[in-house]
Length: 440
Image (cartoon, rainbow, N blue to C red; front, side, top):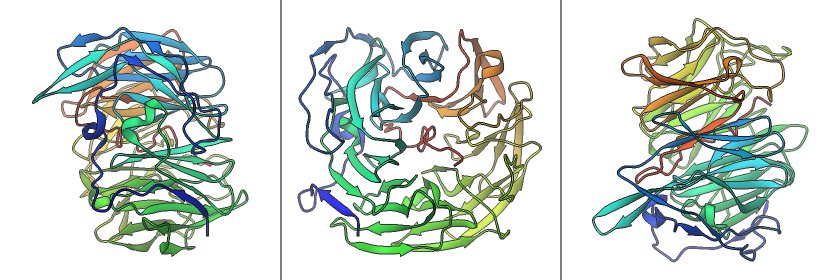
């Protein structure tokens, strides 16, 4: 069994969504630098940093894009640049879960990036604020920071270098939260974990050489379900009714109603390694690859897994796509950015390709997964598409099929993520750890 450290809630305590716990952070935010490994205990607060805040009439969504040497922050409505923050190394972006911060996977751990947009509860209404984005001193230490999963007011970090799982209250991630739960898998591996509303924890199992399955632990870290029938286990997505889908090289595992069910792919090798879920839909969108020997397979089919029935269906697309191509719209529609430059809209219930919206020029996936390639982000009612070739970002209205605004950047964008900046969004499905998924 994995080793664990656990802080229990009071009996009968109900976990509130992140915005119910603390939708507001004060303008003067004290950063906490975690010199110890994440979960080793609360660190000493760093020197207080004062941020000048400006009140806004409504929530202000912002998006962040990494490039070679930093992170650019844009206003999601106007696409005007708000900040350019220098940051060395290859950086990945993950929602922190509080509607304000992102977690940047950098050398040494997960570092909190404050996008400077938030809401404060005031009686029966809220006040909305903006400030200059900044890289905070809050870092959750990790040898190899990997997947980040946000769900139901919890943010779960996975350290691929040690196998350590750290569960945080999403509302306090930006402050340097003390871990609510910690666990170390028997062997370090490229893994992922998600905590559900009943405090059960699904975590992958594997080694540096291979990954084979998952375990589900209850609130007392006792195993309640397990399966080793998932070769090459990779990635996760949470669907409606807290059904969890985990990808395998021959289909998926579905955890629902306290049980793990294997859903077999129609091909002997049918790898699903990257998924996008929505709480508005019981169907999970995934990639689908069938050539185990390919140096770089460019698939033209995506998978749809119905968590109610355990059925897996495939949808043919007019072009290939990559692991940064998958997203879900506000109403649960399945979105795939193709190498033909179009945003393909799929009805997850019927599997019908409803629309193909031209956005950018045709492009080809680079051989190295770290290299920039077009990416997609669904946030606050719009869908954003990046184009490194032209150093541009485009905002798409899926319902009308229009590209309603675009901007040319001074840098080639790579990763993309964002925050809504207001009440009622915990960030859990801005990315479903988009940015944390890779194609390993």
